Amino acid sequence: MMDAAAALAFVREHGVVLASARGPVPTLTHAIAGEAIRGSWWGHPQGKQIFAVLETVSHDPDILVCRLVDKKVTLVHRRLWPALAAAAPAFDAALLARVRQEHSARGHHENTETPFPGWLPASVMEEAKSIGLDAALAALGPTFVTKPRTRNPRE
Image (cartoon, rainbow, N blue to C red; front, side):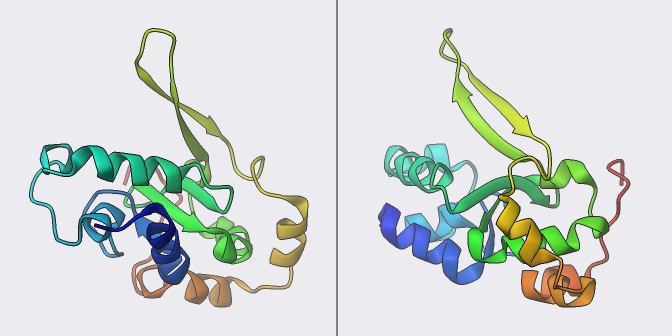
């Protein structure tokens, strides 16, 4: 099983990954487990360890948790934040909001969202100004070049 350091390296290498859903980019929980997971990863024999690694990676300051890919929980490594900011006009703003999961006093998980670009460091926004839209989408990966995105959240 992959530890948190290896999982963070996995996200850094791929740039954009899904937390647990299946889709057009790699899935972090599958990488952590070392195998494709059928059904919920909570039911996996190492579900608690998968959760611990996923939590550590999700709270790393170099990781953006958002809903970029198919409106599913997506992790984007900091190295791609300038490209993401440059490509922002191609996406619905809700897909770029930072999602943080907090534990409430009642023990529930509650998501809090910070709208884009409120979570983005000013230096990254400045760097993004020098990247064209096509180059930004290409940097994010083939999923974003070959599959047009929409600004309409209902699609």
